[in-house]
Length: 111
Image 1 (cartoon, rainbow, N blue to C red):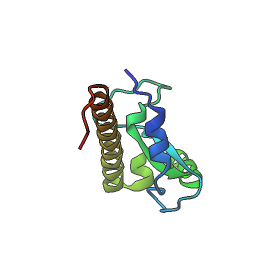
Image 2: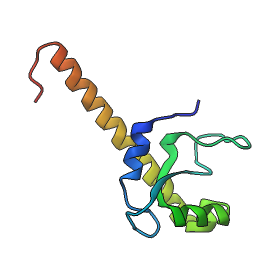
Image 3: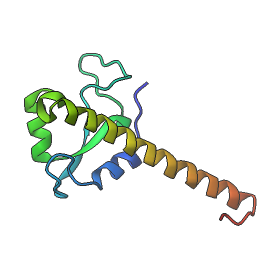
Image 4: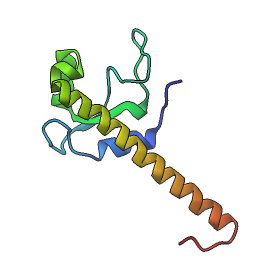
């Protein structure tokens, strides 16, 4: 199942471009390939597999055809790690938000 999460995409947009480090025109790039998810022709990976790229770098990556061709082997591995770290970060934020909400509903003072 493809994960879709608008809040996560906003989080990814808030970071600098992973390649050139600009903060201008950053968009989420859905990785073209990842280690644990099968991809069918024409199917985009889930939002949990996104990295921040500016419009220029995003276009250049797609012109190159793959993360490995654009970043190199080690850079592609880094891109996967960044996507995983960003997803983990939003999961932690969501869990903390849910815990605070539950505490408030029970009348508890969250620490």
